[in-house]
Length: 187
Image (cartoon, rainbow, N blue to C red; front, side, top):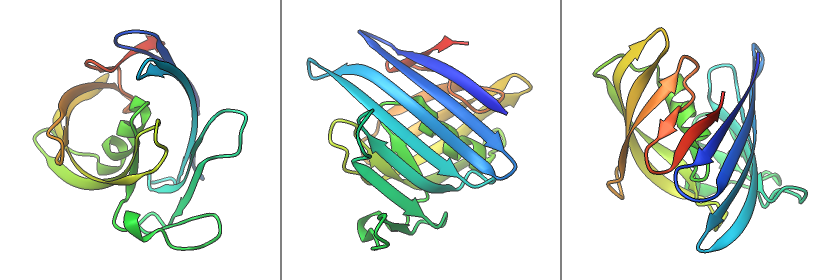
């Protein structure tokens, strides 16, 4: 199954496009983001590869048309290496990635954790601020507020920063609206 989704920025110019391929052999998310940060336009491309159980196995982030500025490989259990095989010890324990410029990466824990209404889980992510392109560890909590045939509602909480948002998702776990940041533009 291949899905294409677009989000627009909540305020100001910005657009994100995701091409998501879900197959028995694994998941590939290929995205492009155009936006404005600190008064300057930016372009960001990303690719996240997961196994069939939504465990992150590879992440590439950079500028479209250039080699990835960050390329990381994971064993799916929180151990990361660079493309040269060297361990990236400062991300040890991070089982997920969170790229701040796209709501897609919220789908990773929503799908993998498969929480029932009322259940919550704390995770640690490799957090990317697209302007810096240098990931760091960030603890987060996801709480399932409700689920149904058309989707669900999840509460996201950054445990370090205290930022919280209630995220409505479609039946595939993709964010519909991320209040204050993103809103679904297509479909």
